[in-house]
Every structure is written in C-alpha cells, then in structure tokens.
Length: 156
Image (cartoon, rainbow, N blue to C red; front, side, top):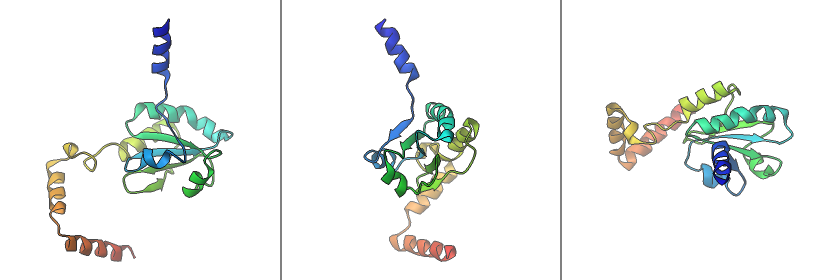
C-alpha cells in the first residue's frame, strides 16, 4: 500500500515552480523562465492553470507562478496590472508574453524561445556559431566598448 501511495504522489506532482518574494530572484536569475503572475480568485487564471501545469510537466524551461495576493511587492516590481500577466526571461531580461494562452501556443513559444540553445551550451552550436563565438571572445576591451557605443547610437 505504501508503494502505491508513493507512486501516486510521484506521478501526480506538478513541475510548476511556486515563486515567492523570497525565492523569485534565486530561482530565476540567469535562467530562462516563463512566469504567470496570478490571483487565486481570477477566472482567467483558473482557466490557464491546467494548461500551465501541463506545460510545466512537458518542457525543460522553468515554468513558475506567483500569487500576487500574497506577493504584491514582487508583482508591482514586475509591472503587473492585470491577471494573469505572463512574463518570460530569455537571458536578456524580463519581457511581456502576449501570445496565445492555450497549451499549444504556450508550448510552441517555449520551444522557440526558451529552450537551451548554443547561447547556453556550446555543445549545441554549429561550427559557424562556434567560430563567431571564438571571434567575439578574441575582441579587446576597447573593441567591445566601440561595438557597444555603435549599437547605442543605432538605437537612438
């Protein structure tokens, strides 16, 4: 009987990571992450929950959620104005997710934007990508500064 209960617990656990004010930075810093900022009373949040949990079980990226009724300062820091607000971190900061909220749309987005890539693991790089990385790594500090300044000027 003990084994049946243990098996049931192991096979029904959710991979969704519940984030709090105390754990958010630690669990998301430097990682690709997909986070839903929610409220327990929100009808749209309740509708999203089954697909969100299914996504968390199906993908390798960190899929998390924050209860904004308990962690108001964290939600405010991330500019949450309505529920659910979905944001993602792709290695270059937090961005708003504004695509479909059904499972297929969520999964497709994660596969296209949040899976491990050459950026994360050199073993996943093509020969050409490795050559580009090697070239960049050989730049001097002044060459990097010149490049950054050129990019800033183009963005202005």
